[in-house]
Length: 406
Image 1 (cartoon, one colour):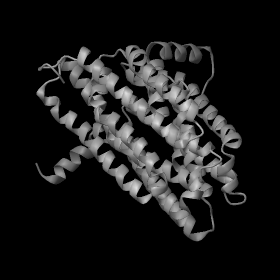
Image 2 (cartoon, one colour):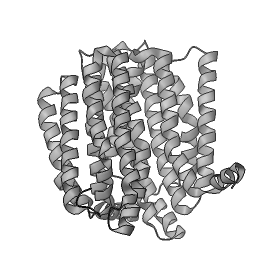
Image 3 (spheres, one colour):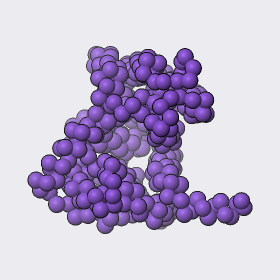
């Protein structure tokens, strides 16, 4: 098969565009954040990075049934669920933006005071708009995938992001602007596209009941696990931004490094669905899973190497980076076991026997040390280590393999 024919088949293949739609926001975000920290410096970048992180934490905490339109068996049923769940999506986004701004005004005083005169409000507005646009885009992508119209949407996503980045670069070259104004320009195309693509929200009794039933049956435990994972990974950034003693430049550097480390994880979340599907079909871990396991283990090693590189570039926060990076790398290396346990579809068991104990240990360590970013980073490492051990133990007990161990 020629290269042209292979490219043509991929161009028309919905699964390929599903990968593009999932990875494009991360790639775009990496380019944007790299440009911003290079262009404005870590001190000016800190407030924007902290605000986007805080919105992400709140967004993962607020329950939302809209992602479960994929469970619809027909396109017509998927469209009905989209109409029912859209008010939940908008409500979650607006609450996330509002609470993020309130938290920033009360807790991020050091970052706001260090911002240039008049720039803080623009930075807060641009950061929340950028974070909200990416959240809404992900939901729209899920809707399009459920209704069989993902390819066009994903292609437009690539075009809009290239256009937004070009417009941001031109805007920065032609005018004296700050980081907030640039973020508004970068987020405008995708945000407007989402507003047009989403149906008009109709708040009513049917929408409320449908959302509550879906949360109870499917998504509440899954979202709780996702929030706990994100909280352990992002807590050092949140507490760094609220610390009156840590320089904003250190907060900016820390936020950028954690974002890059999390970039390694994104392809694994897509691979997780493949592992879940294969194990659900085969009912056992065969030799064919060896490649999946190696990918997870190899990604953990790459994260350690990236952590070492960033610690060398930022010696003032090297200890904090090593603690966060080693904890994330350890857990990432064993996300293969996490994927296998997810295939059992007993999310409540995972929450109560794996995530809850690890989170309690993390909180017990972090609370007395919350004024020290290094202490919170140590708590993060301990939480990830315990989470990894519990996952391995549960996988050895509950996962069927061809040999005696995984």
